[in-house]
Amino acid sequence: MARWDINRSGEMEVFVEVVQRGGFSAAARSLGMTPSAVSKLVTRLEKRLAVRLIIRSTRQFQLTPEGREFFERASTILASIEDAERAAASSVEAVGRIRLNSSSVYCTHVLNPLLPEFLSLYPGVTLDIAQTDAVIDLMADHADVAVRTGPLKSSSLVARKLGSTRMVVAASPTYLERRGMPTHPRDLETHSLLRFSYSRSLRDWAFSVDGEPYSVTPSGPVQVNDGEGMRQLALAGLGIVRMGEFVLREDIARGRLVPLLEEFNPDDREDFYAVYVGQGGPLPSRVRALLDFLALKGKVG
Image (cartoon, rainbow, N blue to C red; front, side, top):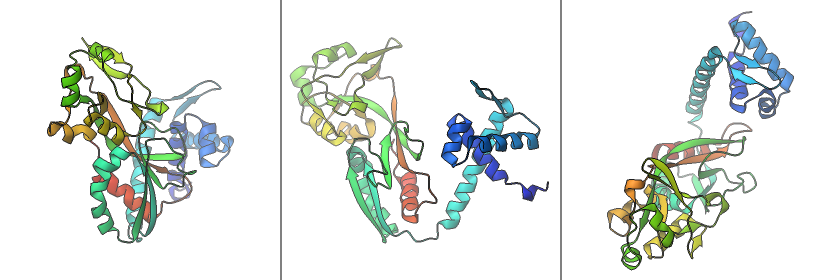
């Protein structure tokens, strides 16, 4: 069979989907195919390459060394194809409304200062921005793009990383004058620790003591549901806060907040992503323009 009779990029796409989804059935659901069709395509690919790519049984799914290498190379090739297609389509004018959902801290400290530049580049675009720290359903809320932290839960979503931020513990000078300076994570048990009210954030504060993990469960008289509100509470002297460094950097530089317990900081980080629905055809030019702009200009660090 001649090479031009073989849809090699299609075979790569199916194989990569099988690996990323962890099985033939999940890949078939994602691709809108039957599991048997996916299995036959991978088998045909292995036969054509004369090499086993996947070791599979009723209870086992494992890539061979050759399969791992092919997966990595195929992923790179598919990404290059996508970039080429995106570049070819970039001449399509970006116009219309973009519905963006983002946390208040990302809007305040990253996005809002960039909006004049974005709108000058794309005068035909209008932005409808909703600020919330709650996890939303993009399709149910009719959002085109959301800026979020943490791993994806929906297989229908695609994410472009916007960087990561180091977590920092801090408090205002007025609070420290009133309550004292903690010198060890255990001292936090007698302090007011500001915390978020939404369930996904109900996690302990992480520290490192003598090279070992040490955690503190935040407790205090006030909890809020958005990051910018949390920052304002800390500036008002109501308690100690643990947030991303990009949010507190200017306050610390100007002396409005004081970093605490840095010698016990494990340097854990929080990742930021621009998330969008990746299934169902090409992205509108206006959405692609915003995603490319955020990936270039809207980095968190």
